[in-house]
Image (cartoon, rainbow, N blue to C red; front, side):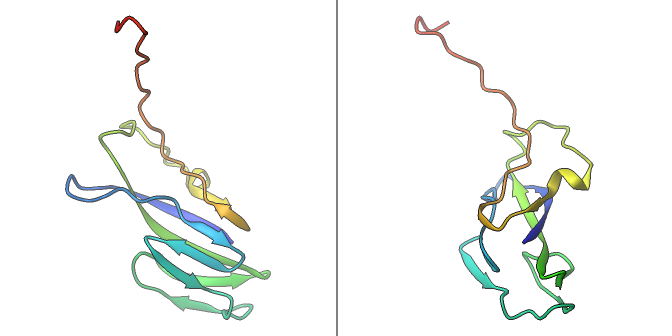
Length: 112
């Protein structure tokens, strides 16, 4: 499955998203399961949130674009503007999280 994450800084009262998981043509995201296995080759259908635009199947591969809210307090202020950094091919398992987070300072054993 080709997944394009559309990063959105979450508002202070919103929870950040966990990246989706994939099992073949089944997408799990935000607690919902989307079975896209019935989408025929060459088909394209409009979709609602959390999807952005349409869902399609080309060359026997489902392609989706989804909203991806991230914690802007924990993330670096400058995120990549390159769509390729948010595009992943996932057949099985977790989609990577492309957000660059601030480094956490190391604390020594003596507390300094």
